[in-house]
Amino acid sequence: MPQTIERDEVERIDRYPTRTGARTAHIERPDPTVWGAIESAELTTFDRDGFAVVEDLLSPDEVALFSAEISRLAADPALAEDDRLIVEKASRRVRSIFEVHKLSGAVADLVRESRVAGLARQVLGSDVYLHQTRINYMPGFRGRGFYWHSDFETWHAEDGMPSPRAVSLSIALTDNHPVNGSLMVMPGSHRTFVPCQGSTPAEHYRESLQEQEIGVPTTDDIGSLASRHGIVQFTGRAGSALLFDSNLMHGSSNNITPFPRSNIFLVFNSVENTLEEPFAAPGRRPTYIGSRDFTPV
Ligand code: 6CS
Ligand code: FE
Image (cartoon, rainbow, N blue to C red; front, side):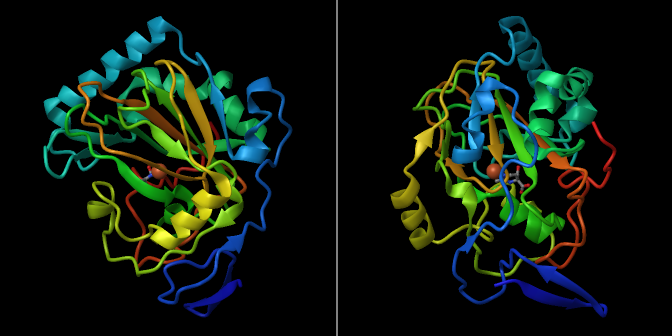
């Protein structure tokens, strides 16, 4: 049931109320999944499943180039104290680096290529801009996973993203095996919005990017979605990529193998869906997490 938010006398309809303090039912997505026209063969399953695999998006030489790039960034002393670099809670090893398109010219160039931004434009049916970019290192031995969540739930609540008219492209830079923390997704779950309990603390991102506890579904939510949709794993060679809907339920387990599972994560939002004020948080997140530069790619 949409909610009206009274804020400074400006009425705003919230079609995806979450973190409201009350336990609310799942919401069948009122928005489409595909806003544009699908031309690429790899994307034909996107509307049904909420994701699609793009094999060999990067050539082996490009995988080597971007792997060297992310290793350079992780070792860069100038980034060690930068807020955009997130370390693992326990091991203190590098977990993520945000705004990677501003830290690497090679990534900035890749983002603009039609084989990348073009995928997002097909699905979103408009020009697109970068909402967020990051590297997830998921190091070996003690790489911590990401509990089940919908990215859109966070981007709506904490970044003020109105609708789930955004997609993420996760590009594997290492082989994604079933055993090294590869992404698990629930096919079709993107059509259900799962309101989460709890209210967003100030500067929540300081904890949530290491381990998210607010804005995660309950075990009942996860159980009912998994029974309805099943769970599949995104495995594939380095260079393959997963394009997925902002509201797809996904997560990844810890990585205790010696094999890191590193990926570059590019989030494209439609220029018709630019950020407003957060729908369920006391303040905006930093722009390196939720960009407010809406310039089309
Ligand atoms: O809070 C965010 O924006 C990030 N958190 C997760 C777990 N996935 C989406 C996004 O990168
Ligand atoms: Fe996520």
